[in-house]
Length: 105
Image (cartoon, rainbow, N blue to C red):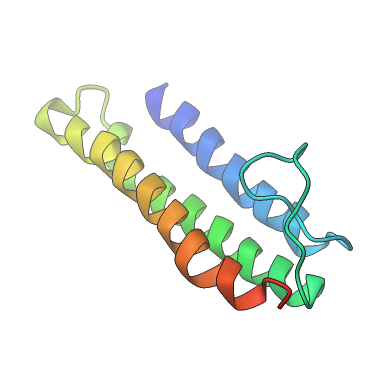
């Protein structure tokens, strides 16, 4: 059951990436309700952001593999640490690489 819930969460991240890929306006990163950043090329920005979400979703799914077993034992640490560190990395990649590259000058 834990594996199924974990995969649903990772598929949600991939779905956010699909939504972002096809967005006409620049997509917001931190929340969908906030005003998105001013960017030079919305399509390129959205594609880079979608790739980030897809990578995050796939990595989260891979971290959930130990949950296939009903009693993962110590291997339960892998999904937890993977989720924490990949979330931090997600924010760093967005803030350091994607946003500065596309921000309107």
